[in-house]
Length: 346
Ligand code: SAH
Ligand code: SF4
Image (cartoon, rainbow, N blue to C red; front, side, top):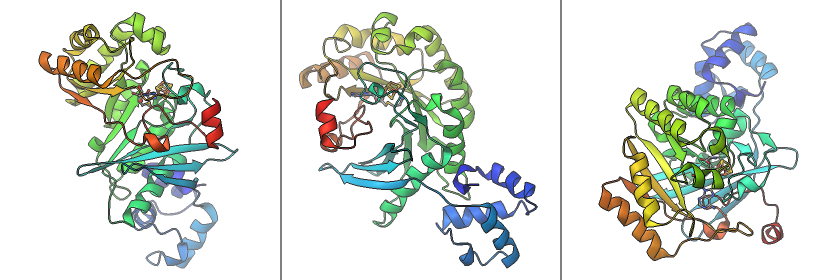
């Protein structure tokens, strides 16, 4: 069994099935996640017999980091090999006193949003818990060597997290485990394109919820996000309200500005009306261009006008700074790319 697949609870069960004491789970979590030690020979607070048995039943397997790129603006991108020639990416984003890691949940994505580079690539595989936790472990070791700590995790990389709920919620449990990575649940955000029946699992997990809205009525939203046909705005927003009622949290609505499609001042006003009875903040993201998308980024002046209109109406709105564009790490730019030629030709 790969240790990194197991939540603390599952590890306890696994140990018991193998006739080992459940409290060894605490010890193992401390060694592996606390001290990053995977050599059983060094785990000297356990008997030799227990260690020999553990070595027989547990192995430590993480995705291999194959590339680590740094952008001129401080953003970093990690590329991981996840077997079968597939790779996924994580992006590390520094901002003020925060260091946010954006993790991937799938190779490709089946939601097919029209503006998204990842969505052009059919989902090839859902990542395992170990592959998600592994992204954090690799990035966090890299920053620890520079005396920094990852403070926030967002599931906003490649893939639709709620299309891979089991691994996503297990990895959240591992990331939050007090004896493990010990991240606060309020520092973990799951972003979804709107798989409504699974939003209650985000609520249950304690993570924050972000929803990609990207359209102010069903007509526009369906045009850019086909998933809207299945779960239209009315049911999506009701499920967001329910999440807020249960948690007392606010939802983050992500809203991509596409020139001539979603960026008019009329859309800004409609966005305000649509979301005003949901406790929320709105995150506007000027479209990041990529080859062959058919969309363009609005002019800077239009982005400012759009944001100001929302502010004038009293919405809580933030603009997501575009970061890491030079290393293809900005929102919606992630895709398994083996070489530059593939980017330029696609
Ligand atoms: N699948 C999840 C999380 C990953 S996408 C989701 O859709 O929510 C993360 C965010 O990037 C989403 O809000 C999406 O709307 C946005 N995005 C996708 N492509 C983009 C692009 N080309 N430019 C700007 N934002 C983009
Ligand atoms: Fe998938 Fe999110 Fe991209 Fe849509 S925006 S295709 S859900 S990764």
